[in-house]
Image 1 (cartoon, one colour):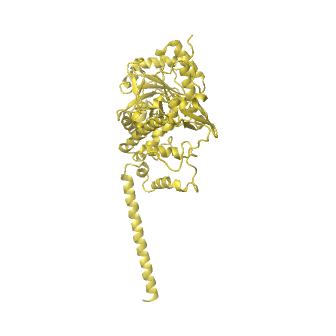
Image 2: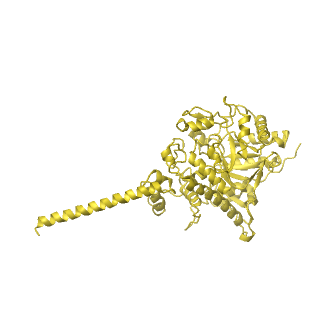
Image 3: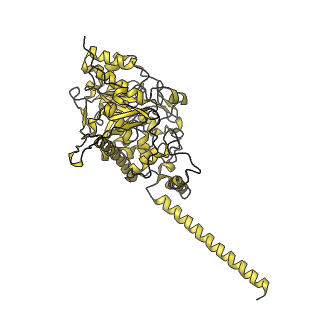
Length: 499
């Protein structure tokens, strides 16, 4: 065979093989594309077929290359990779088992260490966590709450309809409550038939009349569908400023629920016009409780001690009938909603300092049994929940923990209507990736696994259930190599004598 003919034959063979290989690659990509957009487990793959697989590749391979290319497991903010991975695994029911040691730095000031018992509680001696009743003896319809962790306020508007639906069904399955956020009660909140806490924000969305004033008629109607009401004074993301929902997310349905114009920024006042002081706050609490028969609480961030001192003194002067049934204390590190960075960074005490002070005020005033405490502010793991119970909280609320359980990847585009996982966007194409029938199970798994592991920590500490936690069961690191028991850092105060 002449050399030129052989060369042509080889070139033709190479060209044919390249064509076949190219065709195989195209077919493989098309097959992956079809598989990705039809599967229901992974939101990113439904919204970004094929290319979205790079995220999962780096997520899996990152641990093998971290010493060469990536930052540490616990370096990222606002939530590091180790925390997010723990939540993802809990939501998928894959357990929280790791190997080769912890990356949690026990020398870092503020780290907490649970005081394990020499003889922990055997499985046959462990008891289920008792429920806690809110509003008992002070309202017509007290609310028995079973779950330690619950879903914090995230308005329909700030998050999407599929996200609200998944949270509602997940909350019903796990037995936890769902807070509506200040955007009002939507049909999506009610779909799962879960326990609902209706939040009343400064704009009175959902319970306002045509003029924007508080509507007793509307509030009484809503009371049929909710277990309790929460008057929001402020939140950790933006103390001193009302809620912010940018116009791009105010679609006709959301505008109708809130009673505002379509596609215009929804800016709530920075405080309630009809609540100017503690007396008016307690008047409002009492009025809504008598109007609806449901427990009524207050949500606030804490900036100092004046508010709690005045609140307790006023309740003692006026009587226990005027006390709120619960207090939701939000740490300054809260932040699922849109907020000015200055306030998000620098306003409001962190929950680690705010929560002990609030609990101490209630103990000193002998109000701890009357008023239930809900703690919030980046409390997304079982260890965070156990710490809060040690301090004196009755429950914890989480927003971003449940967002992660829905598939949030911390893209930090919540306010822009471009969330790639469909959680905080009203773009139908992006919402398509969030399959409610799959995601609600992850919401439920996350809640149940947090509760389960809080009890696991309790059993390790020699307690029969999580509601036996006290401050002596946890130590706080002050400096490298030195920790202090929480009951020494924050000693239990004595009850003040009544005069």
